[in-house]
Image (cartoon, rainbow, N blue to C red; front, side):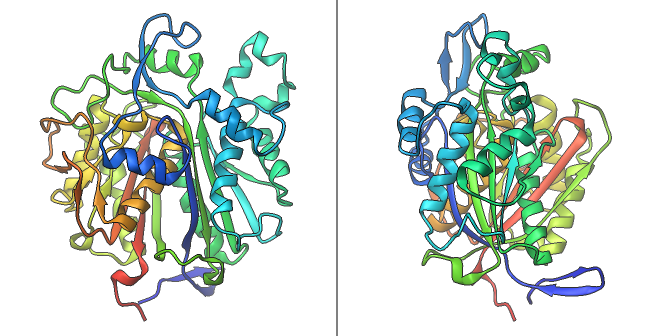
Length: 403
């Protein structure tokens, strides 16, 4: 049965499709290139000895600057754009180039930017001299992207810790359901800076090895950077011939536990998952795959296992991509959602790199090795500082009979 949405007493009907995507990361500059590395279980996390990031060796995932400049040169002069803005423009342009039916200049197309820190490196006195002070503001970063791409609308910004990417997808779906737009270009990006590294180091949360999500011997996160773009539409005529992927539902919650520590019971994320499944009219037993948040920190992975088990999803194959891309903050929810969509299209479950032995309080089914398997839907989860949680569900159009 097709989902019904009520807005101001009016019933709106429609489907929201994935119409294009891209990922720029340490593993590549296209979604296909990134997914090919995931299939081979090749990580982009490695050791850096860079005092501009941290005074000691740092395990992290970084976008190649030489290739970034080369790709951006195809779009125009790099003068006047920050490194983060270049990642965003390269990714968004690539996503749109795959689908010539999308008109970025239309008033019916809106850009949503997801980021936690934006151009935070401009706080540095020397780096900040190159740009106006207002470039520190996320709204100005988004405006720069929209102007370059020729979109006439004022872009929206979502910045809610590490659920920002998933929350941006949920917001895009809701705006499409309301009929205010027919296309949404959702761009999530964050860059690896000393500001970011020092923040996580202050929590003693950064691992000195590649992250081990959900593992008994996990020692913390691997930080990363990158950009993910997902183009959504409610107009089927704007789709290419690729298999139809729908955004079926999504929800967010806040567990109000602590500014930096998640609920110990997982109740907040559990609520977001339950609301997502309800909106999608999807029974828990029909979920094929969970793309988890999986930061490899003690409390996050524990909390997530409880939330998944308490929603009767403990047996569902589940992975974390943080040991491939690092934790890309505001980009994570979009990068990992894009990879989830490609798992569905290629019927492939990606193993969790560096996972060996389950080390969380609730039994969950962590995928250890990549394998071919039919994947008709994907539940993406996310959690972040301040107690925020989110989930979104993607599904192949052909996987269930719908009126």
